[in-house]
Length: 276
Image 1: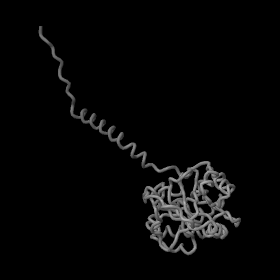
Image 2 (image 1 turned 60 degrees about the vertical axis):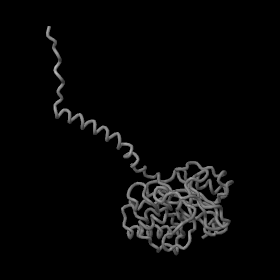
Image 3 (image 1 turned 60 degrees about the horizontal axis):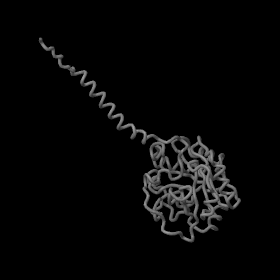
C-alpha cells in the first residue's frame, strides 16, 4: 500500500521577509521604549532649584567641617511638600527659601506652609522664582513673581527674592536664547523686580550654565548677590564679575529636605541682607 507523504511547507520570499520585518520592529520597539520614556521632559511646574546641577556638573563631595562664619540654610519647593521645620531648626538651620512661582503659569501649592512655617519657627525666609525665558519676557515673570509671594518687606526676617536661572529641564539648556538675548531677559527681570520691591534680587545659578548661556556676563555682580550651585568640597570658580558668593547650595542630599546651603557670613550679616 503506497505511503502518502505530506508536501513540504514552502514559505514564499515576500511572506518570510514580512515576518522578519515584523519581528525586528517589535524587538526595536521593546529596546527603545524605556530610553524614550527616560528622555521625556518633566511636567511644567515641577522644576526646582538645583534640578540640573548633579546631572550637568556632577557631585564631588561635601564641604569639610562647618566654618563659624557661615550660616546653614535650606531651599524647598513642592518637591518637598510639607516641611518639618522644627527638625530643621533644631539641627541648626537658620534661613530658608521657598519656591513661589515658575514662568507665569505655576504657583507652589505648598508655598504658604513653607514660607510662613519657616518664619513662624524663627527663621529668616525668602521666596524664589524658577525662570523660563522661553515662555514669556523677564519683566512679565518678575511681575508674576511679586504678585504671587515674591515681594519683600523690611521686617528684618524677609530676604530679597531670588531669580533661579539654570538649565532648562523642559528642553534646550539655554531656553533657545543666544547669550546676548539671555542677558537681556535677565536684566529685564531684575530691573522690574527692583522697581516693584526696592530690592536687588539674588541670582541663583551655576558657573558652567552661566558661562555657556550668558557668555559669562559680568554686568550683574555689582548689584545682585550671587547664590552659587556646586555640589563639592569647595565652591570652585565663580561666574565673571563676582569675587565672592553670598550663598552656596552645596548638596541636594542633606538631612530632612535634601537641598542645603551656606550663607557666607554669620547670622548678623544674614539679618543685614534681610534689612536691605
